[in-house]
Length: 601
Ligand code: ADP
Ligand code: ZN
Image 1 (cartoon, helix red, strand yellow):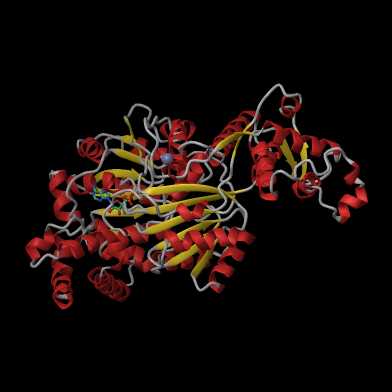
Image 2: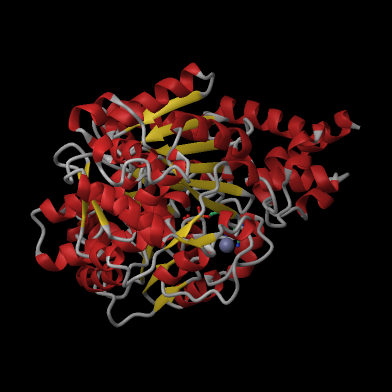
């Protein structure tokens, strides 16, 4: 048995384990099974890769996506680890070659799709082999509670039955209690320990804004967060919107791609491949683009529509900044989104129990969007974590919104809705409040109403904000199945009667401007990005990656290049001290890196 720490240093070139990794690794090396919950970017892969290398025999990794398997295998091979991926799209002769290697004991890690693994032919052959461990990646795919259910995962209990002596590690970034229980039950892990890491990802700066001028807001965000370095994701609420977004981004000169469930399998693979390989690509996608995004240098994630739960949102924004460097998340949302999501739940065919759960999740998401104190604290509370202090690294910590007693404004708006007969959307209601003489006002005689013009004290944008906040607080509903007319709910009554006051936020009109202030102290900052040595190293890396047909980060990650640029090692020995430079990479690339450093002198 090999020593885990020694494997971590020698093979992966990392200085030490992070957080829970060591505990998980030691448990698995000793033959234990368990479930590991870590946020995206938390470092789940090492939790099973290190024990697989330490223990005798083959490590078998179940993974739901071919692109994900292939990138992990490419990264492992860079570290001289004998790894291969077995899945249904492999040409038969390649599959045969992998089996030959397996039979000869030449492989150390095998990535395999669940359907391939649980077929009798595969199981029978694995029976003959020594297995170091089974790792079940993206384990939430086994649960019907999540949005990523994969029926093939339901066959996995066979592993516990056929290989009771072999440790099984399940890993996921979904911490929602229901899903967790479901995974434990489905994968027969009830008796095994649960390793739950903190879900805080302090390097991701989070922000949310009402959606006003979506394109301008996204442009500003991309410019600040991306600056042409690293990749970005823009999540859209529909396929059509993803297509449109990719289109205007391209017209803007971005290298923009699109991904959604409506693409052909080959198109999907190509999109995955281009996203993994491209340098400064922006992917406009629906949430179908999720698993398999292994790039550690995703610099920003934006949502143009309200996600359905804090879990989904966090999983999606968690794809940013896995390398630990600064990353940005922006959520754009409108009152219509909230109402639409509520209606979808109402109209769905789910059980009452499930509807209740979905409603709670949505309300939690709305609370984050409409928060007036530290967004991260509210978010972490959804995962059962109490952060004692405001984070200092979200939009609300950096520019706290002012609250004002908006009871009178709320009453004016609600009564304008009632007086116009609950038949109009926010635009017309606001026109009435502002006393605008539009055609519609004339047509319906709304200039005769007592509420006509009572809102001239506030600008139009403020009234829209009042309407949105009342929707968020549940006092107003938007009839999305009709024409988006505003409808007061029961909760509006005590407000109208003056029995309940309403606190509203003064909206920040241009909060994007604050985006770059007060970032967390992490090593690669703008200065490093501009460093010519770093740029030269990146150039070299791009050429190496292209020549080998692998993503840049499997050669060296940004963080490693930044460290090299900062410390300027003069020989191989010094270079080997840089985190991320393991023995194999030193041998392969050490001289080339030193040559570049000499050229830069
Ligand atoms: P996850 O699968 O949990 O999203 P990964 O396993 O992809 O996360 O790891 C995220 C990033 O963190 C990777 O770039 C990886 O190289 C890095 N990483 C993981 N563990 C360590 C460690 N102990 N020291 C330094 N970097 C690490
Ligand atoms: Zn905060």
